[in-house]
Length: 73
Image 1: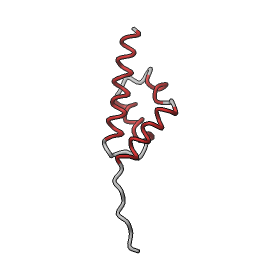
Image 2: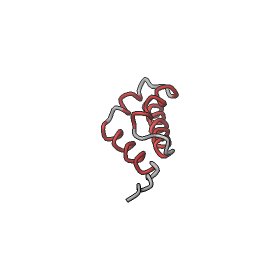
Image 3: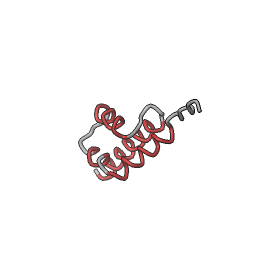
Image 4: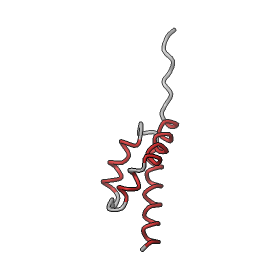
């Protein structure tokens, strides 16, 4: 079962990172509800509650956000 759990964890984390890279999310807080709806979340809740992983997703999201045009000076 350890191998299956590891495989599912890898798939879930990969999906979370792909959503973060999409540019459609400002931070992890909008990604996690999507994953909860679309994944078997029995084990995943603990994976996504890790503050370091949330920070990683936030950083990926920040790098994909469109840069606002500077305002008039």
